[in-house]
Image 1 (cartoon, rainbow, N blue to C red):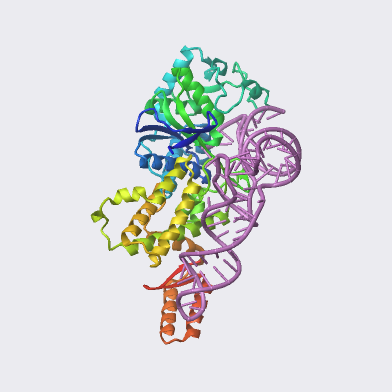
Image 2 (cartoon, protein in one colour; image 1 turned 180 degrees about the horizontal axis):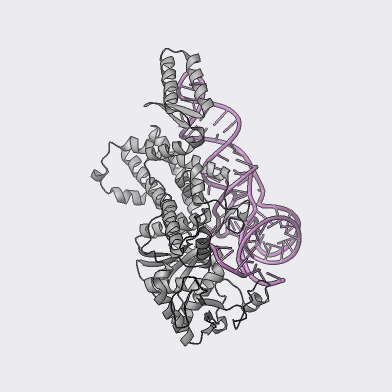
Amino acid sequence: MSLQIFNTLTRKKEEFVPLKEKQIGMYVCGVTVYDYCHVGHARAAIVFDTFYRYFQYLGYDVNFVRNFTDIDDKIINRANEEGIDWQEVNRKYIAAFYEDMGQLNIASPTEEPKATDHIPEMLDMIQSLVDQDKAYESQGDVFYSIKSFKDYGCLSGKNIDDLQSGARVEVNETKRDPMDFALWKKSKPGEPSWDSPWGPGRPGWHIECSAMSKKYLGDTFDIHGGGKDLVFPHHENEIAQSCGCTGKQPVRYWVHNGFVNIDKEKMSKSLGNFFTMREVYKKYHPEVLRLFLISSHYRSPIDFSEKNLEDATKVLSRFYEGLAGAREKTKSLDLTTLSDFSEKVARHPLTKKFEAAMNDDLNTAVAMAHMNEELRNLNTAVSGKGEPSLEELAIATTAWEAAGQILGLFFLTPEEFEKELFEIKNTDKNLDVGKIEELIAGRKSARQSKNWAEADRCRDELTAMGVLIEDTPNGTEWKLK
RNA sequence: GGCGCCGUCGCCAAGUGGUAAGGCAGAGGUCUGCAAAAUCUCUAUCGGCGGUUCGAGUCCGCCCGGCGCCUCCA
């Protein structure tokens, strides 16, 4: 089964066939850099990072563009609030973006254009729309005339008449039609501004994506992504602008991820019910957040809760422990000497099931279910039961690890993960590692003299501290509950 | 008011019309000095009511409940 992707434009799953063979152009709306990213931003980043990784796995050369909106009312407001230059606001939150996303193992896109570096491209586009009578100047602002675009509403399934009868249309006397939107906004005194044929001003929000996607990916490209909340008006307006300018459909597949909810409600700035990524990292490992966010299908809403993150922590710990065991068991094998190793990995049942799941509109939940099933096989083989050869185990381990890596997992070694997880869990507990090791040593000697009562007393004390111990062939290991 | 989505085991979560994946939690077994980990076994008829069909969680209608977009928002 070939790759199927749900296209918002047609509202159904379609076979994915890129414009050029083996090449994909993908544009994803990034963030407006005026504040720290929250879990909703993390989800969008992870979803499209996973698409990106899977496309590359399938052998595509992906031109992946993700922008930064670095000029906007919110940025100007934030600059005024903090008493700093608006560009300083950008610098600060772009740095924070990289810091927070980097911890999630988000791969770098091919291009990361900023709006303010593309003012000339936007002006060209606006001029073209004005020349074609699809946009008009009004008291220093330039508006797109939606009546000039007969397909307006095609993406979001809205019709103009319904929109106009809605109560929430912005009243603006300078517009010819209430639904017209700004391409260029006249600047107020003291605001950042750029010269234009219509006087000093700054770009409207939507035009940047049309201009930059056109510049980096061409008039028509394969995929445009973003959160569901961007469907209207942002992406609808992009289609109107790009199509109005070039006469071509700009995007072949529109892909939108669902929201992160809290108690069934959308996590959002305006509701104030959001958690920033860095807040979450204080209690949960970044990779746990990543695993949690791919544990349901990308188009469904996902409920953010402590319980769900704790469950995800358990799953990821199990994954890493399984991985460590399988690697240990097969470490004596030199994989490069095995014949047809990579072909055997490609033919492994897990690889096949994983691909089938991912091909079905990136069903990461099912992909992970297959990984869980295969993990049982790995653990059984590692414990010496069953009859798989070392080579078969190595093949299965490699297939399993590769699947996880396509999902953006396993970017640490099991040891690193365990260490980082300990540090996070220990933040509040602040346990003394020396004391823990002392008790374990005490238990060891008690056990050697078969003083079970004393051994159990040591363990009880550790348990009370929240330390779980595990006797293995390599000695006693421990971790925090 | 317009458009749209969702309601599956205690919790999370998949599910192309043919008799319900996976995870967490729970129960029991194996292993262990005892544990832990691992592993095995067990636990749902899919919000309600009708309809279409040989057959529906899966299509249609109505109802109940929840949510989203229509303003900035990933």
